[in-house]
Figure 1 (cartoon, rainbow, N blue to C red):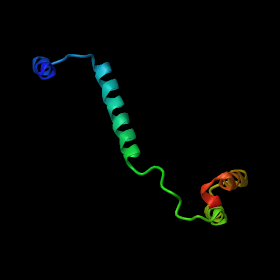
Figure 2 (spheres, rainbow, N blue to C red):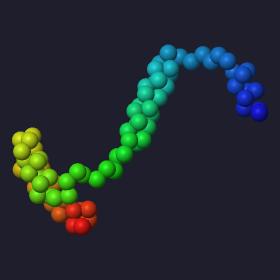
Figure 3 (cartoon, rainbow, N blue to C red):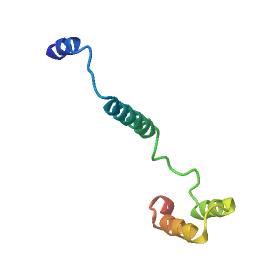
Figure 4 (cartoon, rainbow, N blue to C red):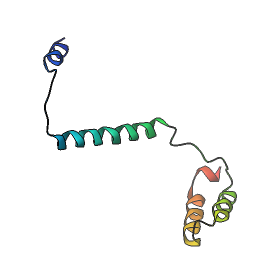
Length: 83
């Protein structure tokens, strides 16, 4: 009850424009992060075949061979692909 009463008294607060912009920027970043976290971040890949995934990466022609080898190495270590 004390908090509600306190909020009613504090109707207007004056802050410098720079501080206001910083607060708005932080709020936008927070909202963006919250939106990302609310999505299912840890969704399993649609394919369980590591060779198929590597082939898809290679087919895009966007990634160099060093990166593709690194991904292949990571997939070999992954418990998900060993099942």
